[in-house]
Length: 247
Image (cartoon, rainbow, N blue to C red; front, side):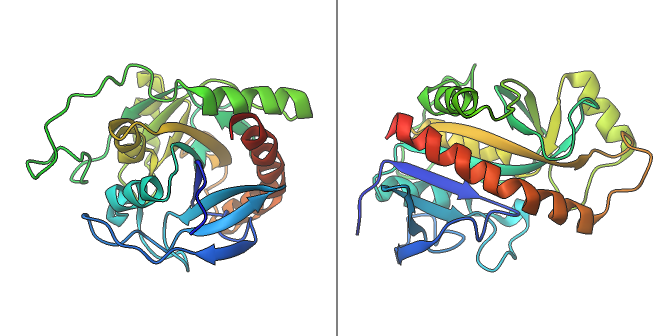
């Protein structure tokens, strides 16, 4: 199998973003990943892409095997990860289709297998996590966006909720009060697990909708998919430019 230092984890809207060249059939000590990782080509630079919710899109956020996904990419040689995440805007100034390279997060999830240090063979570790996205990958995204003239919000706080239902208006008020600017369902434990196994991890968020209670109209799943589809080529262009800086 082709070795590549960059892994891309994609969720809603990213399944058909890249042409695949080979797939890796592998399992992990934590079970199988959501889907077979596939090798993709980013203008001559190889990377591995993993569909977070499976292929086809079927696994709800609280059932994703985050440990297996990260372990599989690490096995394939990936030390750097770009996560593509569809999010709702808690900050009312963020428009649909906006790209955000978040720099902080708050975890509201529960019951997920959130660590490799679970009392098994792995040693107990208390990893430092003050700046969950602080690394070369996030800096490369910001620099590439500037070079391309692609609008990118270079900071923000990701609120990770349980899903798969969307949030209530009161929950969004709470997230805003806590300092969250976007809300999603998959940011944790993905980021924490990546830190545990020394993977430089960045989360590129695509604003798919205004969060509950922010806009006057109800959230439409059809509109979410339309917004994501229109943003994906911008995401691909940004990834190509960013990977050229880090690989």
